[in-house]
Image (cartoon, rainbow, N blue to C red; front, side, top):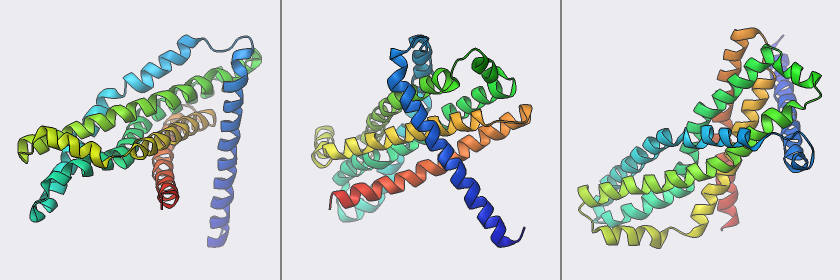
Amino acid sequence: MNFVEKIGSVILTTGRQALEVLALFFETVYWVIVGPFVKKFPKSEGIFSQMVFAGVGSFIIAFFVAFFTGIVIAMQSAYQLSRFGANIYVAPMVAVGIARELGPVLTALVVAGRVGAAIAAEIGTMKVTEQIEALETMALNPIRFLVVPRFLALLVMLPCLTICSDLIGIFGGFLVGVFNLRLDPYRYITFSFKFMLWKDVWTGLVKSVVFGIIISMIGCYTGLKTKGGAEGVGKATTLSVVTSFILIILFDCILTGLFYFMNK
């Protein structure tokens, strides 16, 4: 193929895959709504086990990422603000920056690398070993039994992890402000919450909900489309993580722009 044909092929393939992911999302939402009223709905233990894996299992990694991010932001901002004698403004810079942007984005990237890869590998392994075909043979919908629990788990646990990351990141900045910059602890906390508004918090939570949908849908989609045995599972896992990372950054940019123009 010549250059133009290659570009067209990539665009058509990407568009087709995007439509398939959207179709998977709408079918998942359908089973979330209709599933509890139909017999043989997935047991709650399956959903809760996914919540424990996605949320509790990712907490330690999210803790260290958020904690050291808060420390780094405080140290870097203090380096600039100290020139103007405005070290106290380190507090709101750390709090607002983490709540609006870094908390949800970094947490989503951590979860995408850990949970998204696991989802793609698990479902991909079931696909290549024909376990999904076995479910269909027993008249059991794979979306309902495999995708819905993982979708709900990430939809609930990623915002919870984001809240924890926000608090931990702010605490990391607090340690730098109090023990390195010699700021008064009470004044640091007061300044943090004086400049951080409620919209800063819910902006980050809305982003985390969108990121949870992206991670679950991409992981499940790549898993369901896996072909080629063990090598195919490895490729699907890699594709899931890379695609999730790109979409998280892309949708973060879109949502940030949307919130910016809404608040003007």
